[in-house]
Structure formats: C-alpha cells, structure tokens
Length: 517
Image 1 (tube, one colour):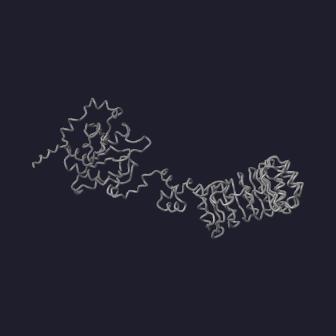
Image 2: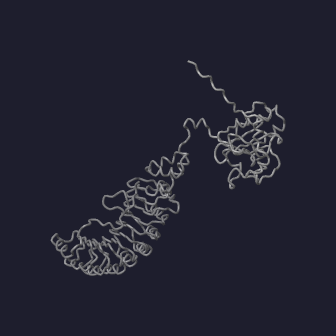
Image 3: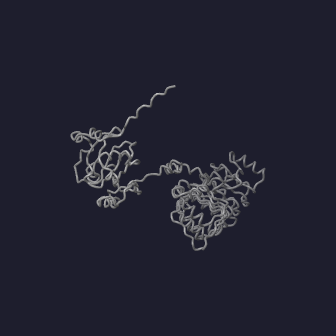
C-alpha cells in the first residue's frame, strides 16, 4: 500500500525583505493614535514594543532582531517580554550602543496588530503609557531580575568596554530599570500551585463560615493569609463556651475577635498569673453576655465589665458581686436586660447607682439577692419608668405594701411582675395592683399574709392573663378562682423567665439569639 508523500513544510522564518516590505510609510504612521502626541527625543538604549500577540515568544523576538545584528551584538541584547498582568503584549529591548536602537519604527506582522517600537525613556511622557496613570511606570511591577542577561556564552573579556559598563549598570534601581517576575512553570505544572491563592478573601470567608470554631482556630495556623482571614469579625459573631475551663488569656483572645453574642454559663475562668496582669483591650464589642453560674473572681469580672460598654443584655445569675461591679454595670447605659438572680454583695449604694443610671432598662431580675430594706427602697424609688418586666421575689422581710404602691405608681408600663415569697405583703397590695394599667402576668406565690378571698378582687385588673399562686391555695380554691377570673390562666409557669437568657431546656441560644453555628 502506497503512502502519500509528506507535505512540504512551509517556512515561516522572516527575512529582512519581509520586514522592510511590511513597514508602515511615514505618511500613514502620522495618522496612528499612538503617534498623535509624539515628538522625537534623545535616543536611548532601550526600545519599547507594544501590541504584541499573546503567542509571541522571546526567542521569536530574538530571531527578528538577529536579522539586523551580528552575533557579537546580539549576545549583549536583552529582551524582556511581558506575558501576564496589565503589561501583557509589551516588551523592552535593551541595546548596548545607542546607535543600534531604532526609535519610532512601526511594523506590520501577521501575528499581531500594528507593532509599535519607540525609545522607552523619550516616549514615556509623550506617548500613551502602557499602564494606568496612577501607577509608576516600570518600577514596581516585581522584584526578580530576568536571567536572560546571564545566558551569554562569550566571556566578558571579549566584549568592548562600553558593553561591560552597560551590563554592570543595566539593573540600577531607576525608573528605566525593569524587573520581570515569572512563575515557575515547571512547579505549576506539577500541581504545587496553592489553589486558595485563586480565591478572593470574600470567597474564603464564605467557606470558613461553615467551619466549627475549633477548626477555624486550626485554619488560622496554616499561613499568614489564613490567620488574617480567620480572625474576621463576621466569623466570630456568636460563640458558646459554656461548661468549660477557660484561661484568662483565652478570654482576652476571644474578646479580641469581635464576638457579639457570648455564652459563658457555668464556665470556670482562671485568674491570670500574676494577678496584676488584668489587662483587656478597650472597646470590647460584646453586646449579649451570659455569665450565669460562672466561676469568676471579682478582679477578673471587674476587669471584664470595665471594658464592656456596649452591653445590651447581661446575665450574672448566682455570681458574687461588690460595689465596684455594680458601678461597672451602671456604666453600660445601653443595657436593656439585666439578670442578677441569686447574686450576693448588692448593697444600697450599688442598687441606687444601677437603678438611676440604667434608664433604658426593660427587664430586671433581682430575685433572691438578699436585698436589705434600704436597697429595696432605693430600687422602688429610682428604677426607670421604662421597665416592663420586673422580678423582686424573695424579699421575705424587706418589701412592704408601701413599697409596692411606690413601684406601681412609678412604673406604669409594667407588664410582668413577680412578687413571690414577699411575705410582708397583705390585702392592701391586691388593691394597689388593681390600679395598674398593663399588668398581664402576676406572681404572688407563697405570700401567706394575703387572704385567699382577696384574689377575687383581681377581676378589676382587666389586662391580667396569667396568675401564679403556688404553695398558697387548695385545688378547690383554685377552681373557684378560675371560675371567677374567667380566661385568666392560673399556675401556668413554675419558674420566672424575667430577664433570664435561657428558659427550660433550651441551651443553644440566649435571649432568643443563637450561640452555636
């Protein structure tokens, strides 16, 4: 079987005649936009070429210039071709003698548009620059020297003195010196290129937001970029560290991430070593802080609250307090919810500071805090009229009928009121409560000095929806009250939810805000 003879290869090598034949005439050159503002300047040893096709290589440029130069001069020729970025399609050719550079010679080539050559320094301010105006041309592109100048096989001793001087001064740090950065193509071809470098920070953030906080901390140790992105505040909006043992330095690091919703319920926070190093960065952004039943010293708690000035809701249930802590709480003027259930150490002065300063308070729980008579008086006299939910249960000997009368008169917006275990209260309190305007929930559990028949007067309280009387009346009396009070629900809630961050078995949120991703 006969085979067809191979087709003759068409030679694509350029000749001097081809280049001169395709040269643009002077008349046509003047019409090009690039030469509209052009004026001939002093010749230099560097040519600037633009409009090169993307498939052009340095070797092909070397072959083109090799047509016009002898091998000795060609060895000292330095060609820098831009292959990436904004400088793509442009090249710089450096000659040793200035006379060898031919300025302003446009050529036609089948591989590109109208090829333009001009002297680099003389055309920089008279022609359209190759980059944006705000960028310094040719100086800050990169920092790796092109190695083509080192490939000359002839020894330096064989070159003229001007050539040696030019080679020794060709990389001085001026605007005319140019350094090109090339990626290692061999390394990239083997798959060693980091794929995350192709992702923007926004895309990387979108990926990291699905990771648990522990994994996020590990990602921060990969490299500098991951460390910076993993500390973005959007990834640390909420955090749950309940039922853990936390070092003070760990608490400082957590707060520095810009956490907004922080749950530290039943967490043990260790004291720093030494004790004097209680420094937290100012401007902590946490707004919802749950320290219920947290094991924390007064010094650490004081240092924490002294740097928290953006708190909106705070829970310190069953945490020991003192006068300084009460002062720091009072400094949070934006506080709307405060839970101090079973806290100790609240004196009359501390209660007065908090009651007067917290004018935006809507929910307050100071039940079972062993308040003194003076502290209770400061509370009912100075509490903000804006309060809507109040729990002062457990005042077994300090809250009287007169105190309740002052409270009802001062707080016309009360919706929920818990007076459980306030044994000094009598039937006069029921008459005072009937004058309230908006009370929907009322708890009078274990108020033994109030006769059962007095509760029938609550029919005058038209807004009442729920009434808790645990440990006080018999089942028969409850049935009678249900019949008399109509739609009022009796003994529906065993525990008060006023100002508390978590209610019932819910442990993944505080005040209705999720703490876990």
